[in-house]
Amino acid sequence: MKNPFRDNVQKMAGYVSGEQPQESGWVKLNTNENPYPPSPAVVAAIQQAATGRLNVYPDPRATSFRKVAAGLFDVDPDWILPANGSDENLTILIRSFCDTGDSIVYPYPSYVLYETLAQIQGSTVSRLQLNDQFEWDPSAARQLCGPANLCFVPNPNSPTGNRWSAEQLQQLLPDDGVLVLDEAYGDFADEPHKGQLLKDPRFAGRIVVTRTLSKSYSLAGLRFGFSIADPALTEGMQKVKDSYNCDAIAIAAATAALEDQEWMLANRKKIIATRTRLAAELPKLGFAVSASETNFLWVKHESGRHAAIYEGLKQNKVLVRFMKFPIVDSDSVIDGLRITIGTDAEIDRLLSVLADIVSSV
Ligand SMILES: Cc1ncc(COP(=O)(O)O)c(C=O)c1O
Image (tube, rainbow, N blue to C red; front, top):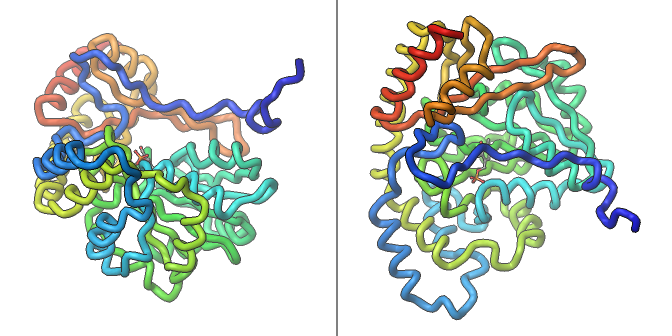
């Protein structure tokens, strides 16, 4: 029998998500979750929604959520499009703006899901290589991004943790396409922006900002994200999403989460304090630590034995992310460990296990 899959689906490898062990006892520092629980107001909203009318469909426009999100970013609600996690934002974007044979560009290394989504769509992918300072060559950026339909850029970036300036981002604007600022880690930035770039004349009408509640709002298990863009773009993307992409419980919870800024900001502060402490401790164990504006650190060990360190940690039930990226047009690779900032107790455990491991690698 002929393989029934579409050609490009047959050929692609598929995205490999981070390990999600289901049993307890792990120190889980591998997928950039928030170690602190969501606001009690979120739990109350979930309980209330669960005793509500689950027999009827949810509000397809998530009106309550859009109002609160719009207030936070100083835009009208018609700039906001809610999604089932930010990954769904990205799917909606690809399906809205890319056809078979169209092209996407993204800085490399960054979030490789962009590439998988483009492969599903049958679009072509160009990787814009970052150098050791996590910068791209401006002329390569213009050459690749100019003709692209979509350029995706996580800002701050994962796994490197750095953030690019508006002037640098301007180099990524496609001539006729759209620039996607993936701000999954936006709330952890040194100066978190509240939508200024959306109205900046250099970018206005040509960018879509995506946000998730998985990281700063401690809601990875809920699946909620949203995009912010000019109403003309948002209206078009609205046609592409599933009618009821966000369920009633998630809409209630996400709305309550955004309303409790105090809770999110208190957790942000604790995470940044722990990040600062970890960044100071790791060099004592032979690690070079990249500056981070996120809830994780990108680190490289002087031994270069990142896979062995990852395995050693895993044997001790401490999970971090070992990442390896082939350099564009070269035989070399960039590799390292991405470590999510956990609670202070989790980071103490990481440091004590690491001290044993690095003495023997
Ligand atoms: C850069 C980036 N974008 C998007 C996402 C997806 O977030 P969500 O959990 O909302 O799907 C992640 C998750 O790790 C991420 O790192």
